[in-house]
Structures are given as C-alpha cells and as structure tokens.
Length: 335
Image (cartoon, one colour):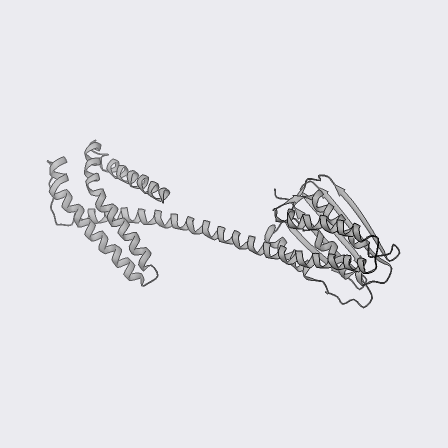
C-alpha cells in the first residue's frame, strides 16, 4: 500500500511540474504557472482516480458504459478547471489576460483533464499488469512446488515399500545379513526424511544413497544370479542435483529386470559428470516374455519431475528391446 501511495505522489508531482514548465516556455512565468496549475491539480487528480475506479468496476460490462463514464468525468472536471481559471487563477496570476467561462477554449481544459486521466489510467494499467505477472509467477511456482512435493511423496512409499519387502524376505530366511540390511534401510530413511526436502543435494550424497540401495538389493541375490557393474567418472563431487533423481532408475532396473530373472541377470550403471553436465545410464537385462512398456510409476514420475524442475535442461531417454532395458538421464546444471 505504501508503494502504491509513493508512486502516485511522484506521478502527480511530475505531471504538475511538467505541465507548468510546458505552459511557461514562452513567457518565463514558471512560478506563476506552478501555482496556477496547482490550484487545478485536485480536480484532475479526483477525475483521474474516479475514472480508474469506474474502469475497475465496469470494465467487464458494456464498453460504451466505461467510455461514457470517462467522458462525463472529463467534461465535469474540465468545467471545474475552467471555473477555477475564470474565478481565481487568471485574475490573480495573469491580470492582463482575459478569459470567458464558456466558449470553444473550454476544450483546452477538457483535453487537459483527458490527458491527465489517460496518463494516470495508463500508469495504473501498467502497474496492475506487473502485479498480475508477479501473482501468476507466484501461483505457478506454488503449483509447481506442490506438484513436486506430491511426486516425491509418491516415490517415497513406493521405494520404501520395496525396500521393506526385501528386508522381510531376508528375515524370513533368517539371513545373517538382516542386521546389515536394517542399517542400510536406516541410512536410506535418513536421506528420504531429511535430505529429500532440500531443493538440491550434492552428487556425492545422492550416489551414497544409490550405493546403499544397491547393496541392500544385492543381499537378495546370489553372485551367479545377478551381476552389477558401476562406473563413475565424476569431476566434481559437490555437483548439485535434485534429490532422489537417480534412485528411481536403479530401483526400476532391480524391480523390473533382475528381480524377475532366475539367472544371468545384469545391471550396468554408468555415471559421467563433466563441467555443468551429468549423464546417468542404467542398463539391465529383461526376463523372457517380458511385456514391452511394463515399467512402474517411478519412471513416469521422474519424467514429470524433470519437466517441472529443469524444462529444456534435462532429458530422460528410454530404450527397450526384447532382452534389454536402458534408461539414459541427461542433466545440465543451471546453478
């Protein structure tokens, strides 16, 4: 509210002095024109503000009604200005001049008011446009943030459910690896509950979570049933990325690839980070008679997150054959 008042004060002061200067260019009576114009400023300000309220109230209705109201305000204000000149400012400041209350010169006063109203309405419309732009951007940001949060909330129970099922399977077999698996799960929970709320985490932190998840999954498989290879070429371990961006690709490889194969399964993970770009590739074998396009909510969720987080600066490519499934994620860091 204070900002709106301040700009109007500067606007009307500038208008007042500009009109006074324009009128005084030929006779060097600037001070007199300042006082003369000042006497008429309240009328012009009132007409302009009334016109703005009229526009705001009736702009959604018939346009002739808006236009007619503005013309009426200008006619009345022009007559009041003419009356002020006739009764006071001309006799007081310009006694050698003559003025008539009525006549064609009244049009000068009418158009003076039209000018003031036009400039004021233009300034108000521009200000309103800027406010609407900011509100739209704010609403869009809030909507994006809410949708991202919903997507993260969708991933968390999905990923945690799979992990808990893995530990449950180990416990039923009375595996000595169960305590190790529980510790891995605690690390994952810590990341999901605290780190994933941040807008970005370091690549090192995200990779540690991925490795914990891989170690947890590998406990379910014999060495000859699944082969996992990981190649990391990282130039900067502090490279910032959104949390839980890499994990869905790895989880998908275990769930829809190795998890459904009896033997000979493999998962090949490659991460390359150079400069401001990151490439993450996960390739896994598929079981026989696997239906093409049979992936879970993780990948579609990830695609939507990328659209919201970095449109035009990331890409997720899926290549699927009868024997292999490959997901390639490319991210360009804009920080």
